[in-house]
Image (cartoon, rainbow, N blue to C red; front, side, top):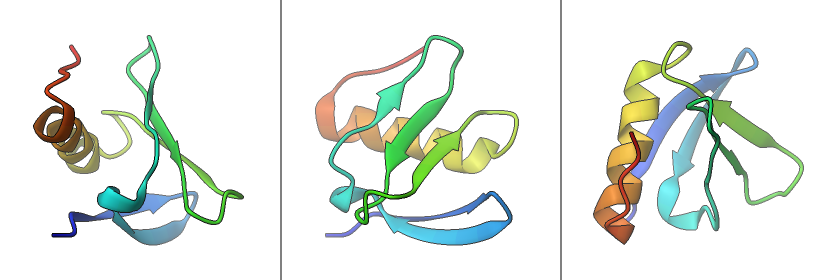
Length: 70
């Protein structure tokens, strides 16, 4: 089952199926980045610019992998 979220990034609105993202990168400063399927667009989300999407991604990662982040 697909897990969709809506993110506003760089003045564009993206609706992303997190099940299709192959890798997430959690950076020490609390940002999460991932590339879209096209490989040309990298999305960077942090708690300040999009708190709901940030938490949804963290919840998704923890649910799928059991890995939690601070």
